[in-house]
Length: 226
Image 1 (cartoon, rainbow, N blue to C red):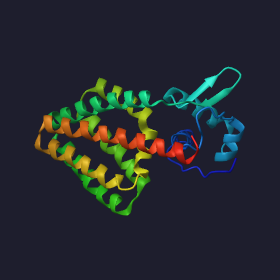
Image 2 (cartoon, rainbow, N blue to C red):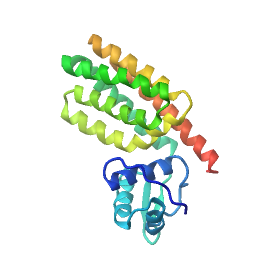
Image 3 (cartoon, one colour):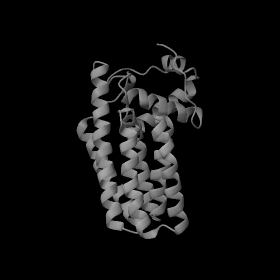
Image 4 (cartoon, rainbow, N blue to C red):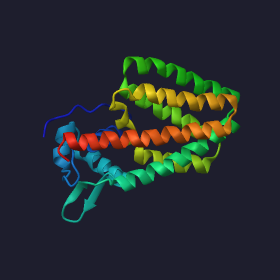
């Protein structure tokens, strides 16, 4: 197994979870493939301890199955399960957008608009990784702006399970610009205090993300023979 450079983002375990999740979603590790701790440690140039913890987190996310006598294997994420998670995400983010339009402070609205406008440069540069980081911050601002701790907890948990799929969509040609436009509709409605408009824009956005994510996953499966 060839060594792959690990892009450091947070702790070693967090970086490894991200790298393994991306490799699974991208089809480099096909469903049913056994994930050997020693081989993975060599591939990512880390010790076995973070590999073991990363596999535990990926199991909780539903990307890895741990089976008796087989260890960890890549899970099969069915279309139905993926669509089910995105259906829930659509409604949760729509609620957050509506509540943000109704409850965000003036300072929170300005900050949301500032980070949104700053992302134009990332779109022009085609900076997929940097835009993915921005995207996480953007949506987190919506969760914070809803000012509801329970909703924040539920939507954050759901988002963590979908994070690898949401990152993958940015590899589709033209997706960064479309994502920015979709964000723009949400921001515009929030700045106007238009709860219904923000809710509608967020629902349309996550629905598009769902379609784009499925498109990428199916394309990856074809490329890697899945």
